[in-house]
Image 1: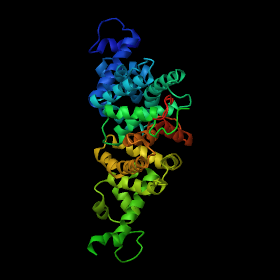
Image 2 (image 1 turned 90 degrees about the horizontal axis):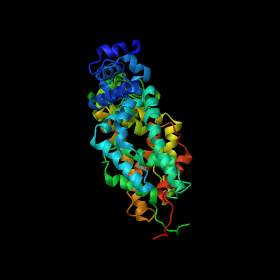
Image 3 (image 1 turned 135 degrees about the vertical axis):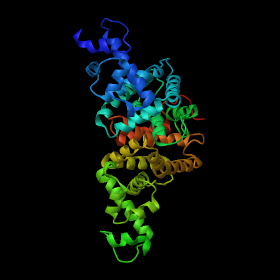
Image 4 (image 1 turned 180 degrees about the vertical axis):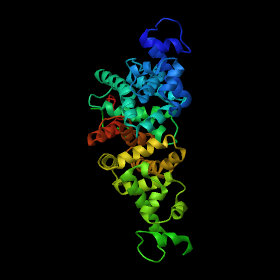
Length: 210
Length: 210
């Protein structure tokens, strides 16, 4: 088993003597990366530390992740993804409310808020981390949201001419703005008001429905 | 002139031999801070470098600014403020469109976009810089916007129950989100769509006006 030799002989938490399936090793690395990030932030986050924590070799990690930033973002996504599933009940207002509620809960009640602000912060002066953040986290999340809103447009629950990409910036982006740049709270009332503003408009309805 | 001795004797760009008015010295420091930030970013930004560039003493700078971060934020604000005046024409939609247009122009056509993303980024792991960013830049800007929207509520141009703080996150915050976390463009079409979404709503108007 040349490819996994040092994993098999030095792994502190190996589960058996045979070669483990690649998917299992990869999941271990992601779990270890997420745990390290949530425990200690980016300051202590190195390929070495993740390898040691997962009980696999650095070589194995480099097979899947080109950089520390890429591993950090995949570890973050792996950890938060279960909390961020996008419901598809057929009612876009209910689905957006549920998803935003889960998102804000994650940011305010778990270490995820501190971790993602640190990742976004460092990405502003680290081009590799910026690419990892975009391609491994924010672009896929944006895509899920836009797809859900496009389905709602097809059902007639959103106007056909509404800019769904802009709506992503006005819902999740508004939460990030408050998190990154203010000391105002991220509450359920806030996300309810975000939704009310973009769905029903802050201008008075002076004309009848067209 | 004991307080300004080294300023008066070593200043490379001093304009005369008498003690200059404090407001003039302060403005020089702000101009120098803004210029240094826009030319070189936070990497080269030190109290020493600003003092040298402005031709004033470090002691003088510390009279007004408690930290490098405070001076950087005031320098940033001093530089961008003329481009960010908030119009008050009596028509909130026109005023918001004009202000957002100026804001996006500043972020995309001048070094301000790179500078503010660096400041926001560093603020995520530098508590002093975070306080400076909030108290010296983003809170005052937020206040101006909220006041303009509250006046519009009094004129009946925005619903009385609209959450104006949330609208700030959904207009300027949406622009920051796109700047910090995506490679999508900040265009006039984008700001027009942001406004259309929050003013008129992305949901279809199925009921007549109340």
